[in-house]
Length: 335
Image 1 (cartoon, rainbow, N blue to C red):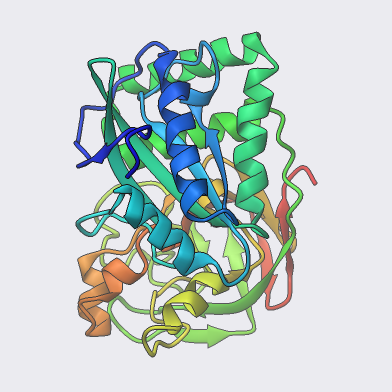
Image 2 (spheres, rainbow, N blue to C red):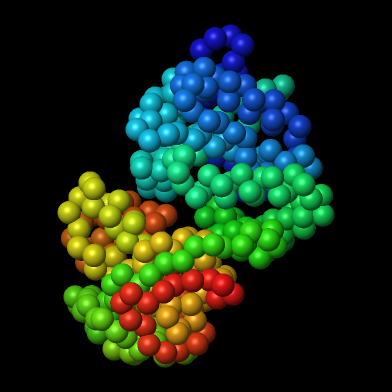
């Protein structure tokens, strides 16, 4: 790497905190952006996230959005490798069709962790990241409320980074004025009458408010985890797009995740603490439905847990009951 660039070193885990904004962050980001674009000029690299917004306290991580055009995913990964970024380690990582690379940088006596999000140029996620940053940059009051929310999340005892991210996402949807424009559809419906038994496909199912789907094991209290109190046991949903992405590397059936509703065109990961409609039914997203070892055991595939990490779907509760049918429209509740 040319001497004028900041060296990228090994990523280091640090406790979850909300630290004051550091003006050295944009300096580090600018050097990394220059290094990446020198190696792959077709990339668009931007500084996003809290560290890109003056006065916005946060984890202190420098987030880069690395945008590639069709056919350039592998060249984008190579550019990141050349600069010194590393793949995520362990099971808790983004899939390689939407990867994240990590590293750290020493600058002015301080070590800054860096996340490089590799995103397709036609992805809605690109506009969401830009919108998040630009709205904050234009509103000091919004920055103050956002920082207060982040500090409150940590004060509540949340130390898990995934739970922290989900809790922040609810603020983004409700407080930042980002109006959801998506509309989706029910592609398939499954219920499991008994725990661990095969799922049954349906064209239509009755959603019972406060209970679950008629005929499903969790509505009847017979699910594997029914005796463990938790939210979001009424209905589970998974994106058809997630199933198709996994199917590119392994042969799977659409009921392999044991989720009740397969959706298309629905950003399930963004619907925690959010109401949305499925036909005449109103659901409330409660928490992400990350894959577990139980799922892998039932499927007889130890790799399944990793394959569906961060795209395992959503757990929801039924706010208003009614019928759900294949081809029903899915939309934000206030759309």
